[in-house]
Amino acid sequence: MKVGGKHYRTIYPVGDGRTIEVIDQTRLPHEFTLMRLHSLDDAVRAIADMIVRGAPLIGATGAYGMALGLSADATTAALEAARARLIATRPTAVNLRWAVDEVVAAVAPLPVSERAAAAFQCAAEICDEDVANCASIGEYGKHILAEIASKNPGRPINVLTHCNAGWLATVDFGTALAPIYKAHEAGIPIHVWVDETRPRNQGASLTAWELGQHGVPHTVIADNAGGHLMQHGRVDVCIVGSDRTTKNGDVCNKIGTYLKALAAHDCGIPFYAALTGPTIDWEMTDGVAQIHIEERSVDEVRWVRGRTAEGNITSVSVLPEGSAAANPGFDVTPARLVTGIITERGVSPATAEGLRHLYPELDT
Ligand code: MRU
Image 1 (cartoon, protein in one colour):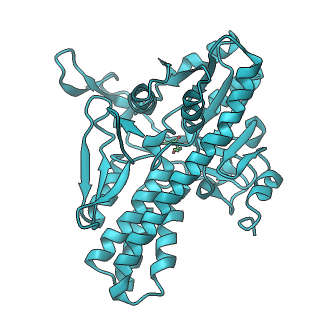
Image 2 (cartoon, helix red, strand yellow):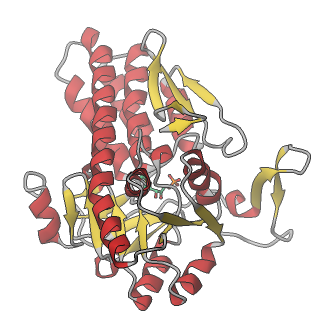
Image 3 (cartoon, helix red, strand yellow):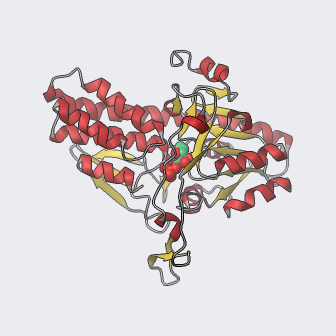
């Protein structure tokens, strides 16, 4: 997608192809900074410190992390150690394990001397596949938005989204935001309610930024405002991303998503999750019981990062001294609250039958 009119992916090889460049998302929206990853350590830190984030991009970074690790040591012991370190960075997004295991499967049968090159090749293919998948999600989702627009002529359709599931969270195009970009490009009048998404504000700092870069009308709201807007008929549809979706359609996404689904259900508003195939965990059937929810540092709740009037980037504490805090990073929206799942293969009801129909080869 574009930054200042120039096309960017969120991750790509540079130089001799053995160095990986990413956008440092901790500096957005105030600074657009690129960062180079030269080693497994760099990739592990980039994921753990959320320099890169979003399930598909975490996966792509995991794949390149394997390649960077194998560049230094391609023995089987090092391969297994690299896999373990990368998977341990963040537990909830299943794309990470999927991508790392794709690389292991591709290189483990090879002679040690050929593993690093094959790993870089595999990581590049994972990125290209993600771009194609997200573009396809955009097309399928655009039809849903066009249908809603045809029923509401003469006004923009209002889409509410939570967190950032845009191109910054993938390699390009995004998942939940891809239909919005495609609809906007197609001239469908659209407006996006952007949940700020406490505590790290991925909505306010990333979704608003990337929509702004593409001229898509949007309004940032406090996370607690969405239900009220729904009650007053100011939201036509909700579209969110996912970090892990079970084979029967339970959708795990950024903390707060479940509350939006409950409000949408209560107000009769369609609630869609957009996700690529690698985000489906075919070994799980009960998201609330089975999905490991990442607990992140309470400092993310205690401190808020922003820019002062003088232009300085700083963090301020918003809690009284001595108050405890907690920071679960994700929650699970049960399938019963999900209107449909928008994938690269089409739109499915949030059911085991529906997903199996789209991915017959995966539900073994
Ligand atoms: O903690 P984050 O920023 O990695 O959480 C990201 C989300 O919850 C996204 O909605 C999800 O990963 C889908 S990204 C296409």
